[in-house]
Image 1 (spheres, helix red, strand yellow):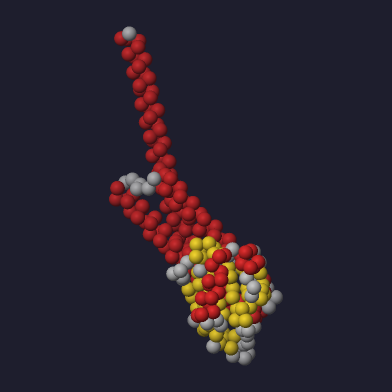
Image 2: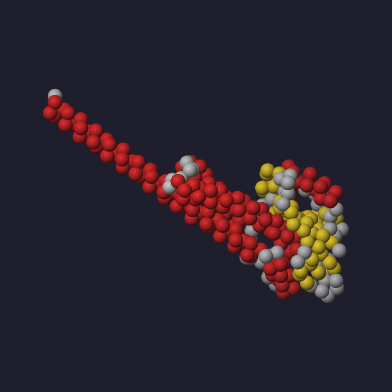
Length: 259
């Protein structure tokens, strides 16, 4: 039995620099991911969104690799989010079950698909935690609005909050191609079947939709906050104009009748 384990090791990984400096055998690369052969039947998968996946590697080997990639990490994470799955090899058998994948042989492309989906599961766990906390924070503001009839957040903080939500949405859209199939599955029915079953077993699509639903809820709330804030600012401006007009009229009245 083999094991695939994936970790969220950083906010982002510098793929270009990693490719230039890491000396393991490179089997596949593009602008956002690198797939290496570490040694016989041992593989490493790196993703720009800060996740690394390992196949058939010991804890010591993984720790050694993590120390090597630290220079290419932006905001290295010590307390890592992780996910793992066991891989069995049984001739002429392809089966995907909860926490156990059975492959007919040590096919590199099949292994890569298992590592890819495990990595995306870890990334979704991270974004789920982030959006859950943001939703909790948003709910605090809506509760204050309900109880006090006013907002407890300044315009500058609201703009930063909106920017944070937009950045998270962009990161998810850019890095997690949950609904797309890798090129290796396009002309291979067995690989395509494996990929679809892995997505279903890891529940990737439903978890992805849940995260997007949370983001949309938060965005709707923040847009409402912005409208309320704009209305308040507009009302203040109207009152200032009215006061200035009254002062001008009063000054004109004083000048005309008392001077």
